[in-house]
Amino acid sequence: MILTNPFVADPRVYKEAKYYVSKGHEVEVLCWDRECQYAVDDEKDGILIHRFHINSVYGSGIKKQLPAYLKFRKACIKYLKRQKYDVLHCHDLDGAIVGLGVRTHVKKVFDMHEYYLDAHSKPILRVFAYLVQKAQTTFDYIIYLNDKQKRDVQQCNLSKLLYLPNYPEKGIFNDIEKKPSEKIRIGFAGNIRHIKSCSNLVECCKKYNSIEVHFYGYGDIVDKLKKMAAGINNVFFHGRYKYEELNAIYQHIDIVNCVYDSLGNDGYPNKFFESIATRTPMLVDYRSVRADFVKKYEVGFLVNVDDIDTYHRVMDQILIEDGILKRASNNYANVKERFFWEDMVVALDNIVAG
Image (cartoon, rainbow, N blue to C red; front, side, top):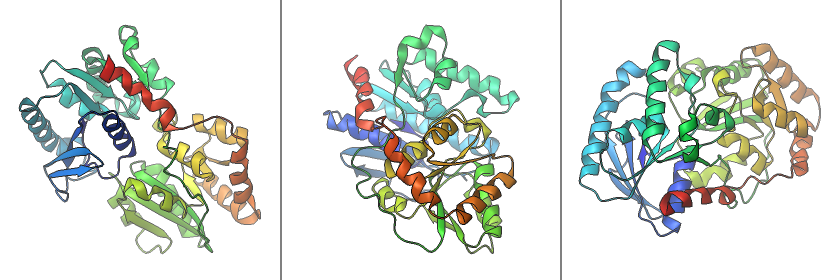
C-alpha cells in the first residue's frame, strides 16, 4: 500500500490493510512521515509499516511540498524495486501518482478515498484530470465511495469499479453513552482540512461560552486554526489519536461537525457514518447530500458554511430548546439501513482473487 501520511490514524487504510491480513495476505504500508517523528519500520496488527522520513510542512501549499513529495515518490519506487509483491494498492491521487511510476507488472489499485476532480482551481485542474484519467486507465481496479466519483470515470473504465464506502466497523463503537458535561461539545475527529467549516466553529466560540469545540486529529489547517483560536478558552486541539480511541472520543462529543467546505458536499465521509453508529446529532451543510438524511430522520442541524449567521441560529436553537439533542439522538432508532464495514469490505476479494 502507498500512503502519503504517517499511517497513525487513518481508519480507512487501517481497515483495508487489516482485512487483507485477515485473509492470509502479507501487507506492507509505505507511507510518508513529513514530521519525521515515528519509527521507520513498524508493525500493527500484522500490518508491516515502512515510513519515509522526508521533512515537509503540512499546509504549506503545493509548490513548497512538491520537492519533498517527489523525493517520497522516488524513494517508494526505489524501495519497491527490491520487493516481491502481487498487488500495489495506492491511496488517493497522490498515492496513485507514485503507482504510475512503478513499472512492475502487478495488479494496481486506485483507491480514490474522497477525491474529486473539482477540488482544485482551474489552472491545476487540467493536470490533475489528466493524472486521474491516466491512473484509472492504467490501473486494474478503481475503488470509489459515491456516485459523484463514479460519474467522473470514463465509460471504458467502469468495469474496474469497486464500491467501498466509509462505513465503521461493528465492534469499534461498543459504548455510545455520553460522558456528562456542563457544556455542549461540538467535535470533529479526522483530517482537519476544511477551513471555512472549522473556522466558523471557532468564531461561534467567541459568542457562546456554553459551547466547546474539540478538534481531534491533524491536518493542513491546524496551525492556522490555532492562531484564530488564540485567547479563546473553549476551543481545544487534542492532536493525533489512535483508531481504537475513537469510541472514547465520541463519548465526549455531543454534536459532530459533518460540514465540509462546498466542494465536499457530494460525499459521505467517515464522520457521517460514525455519527449514525454513535447516535450523535450532526451538523451538516444544507446543500450537501447528507442534509437529505438529516432532514428525513431529524438527527441533526442544517447550516450554510458560507454564512456564519446560520451557525448562530442553530446554536441559539440548541441552547434554548430543552432536550433537543436527546431527541435527535433518539431519532437514530428510526434508521433501518445497515452501515457496517464488514458488509462492504468483501469487495476487496475481487482484487486478490481476480
